[in-house]
Length: 357
Image (cartoon, rainbow, N blue to C red; front, top):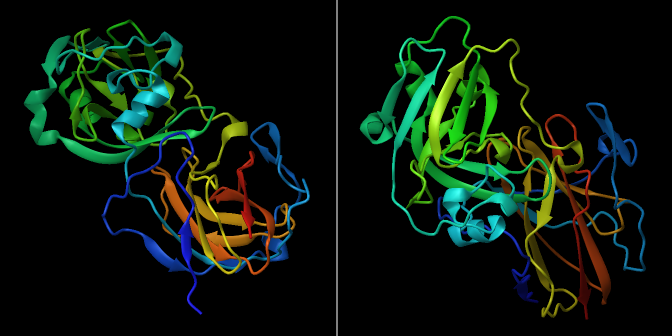
């Protein structure tokens, strides 16, 4: 008997990824039932000095319970968030993307592309640089952007000049250990210089092939893999390379929001019949540690189907898809979590209810 395949309608708010056509998916991975020794030891796990309680386990609300659900799984790390989705997330144009809370950002729909920045601080001689003259150093990267709190919200293909190229042009004084990119509005977040270089920070002027523009001068924006969005300074007017008494700390993701998991579709308006294939899809991101598995439960966390994401890297999202079917009519709930290379299980729940008739 031929089954009908129904992809759940994409109806969730937020940045749904576009298919990239890059053909880099790891298809046909085989799910496995979690063994007892791979299950979490309890509903609480520790991250640094925090105890994080998983909020969804054992929350039976009358849904049909199915243990150890099998299905097919695949994932990739390709695709970009459409620019209009990025605009919606931040409540402003992409040129004002990350570096300040959305309520403080100015809407700047017009402007010009300006690649000039001033370089100063503890250097032998300050200078002004036009990044467009460093086109031989230009790099393109696919990179995620995520807040310290909240959901994952953006992945983009960015083009720019490595910060290392600019630092290499400066004659640094001894013991310079800090870099701060200041926006035209005076906003700046100090970073350890070595951290920024190790992360291959980019001075970006194109996002998803769209040239950044500004009415405040420079339209350059700082991007760094595996780094929270507060450091993605916009409209960079100057870069200061300084010698500080202590190297600044780098803000990390709030432990409550580590290993973020989202379902990017909705069952609203969909009719599923017993025996139909149903495909669930979403994204996972930890902003620092690779996601090693996506795990699914259809019995309120009593059992989990483990789907490995071997080869996934920490600098980009994991876009996951899981297809299964149900032989009996009823109300169901799918819960999904992710697991990282350093052993963290998603602290916050992601679940979707649906009906099979």
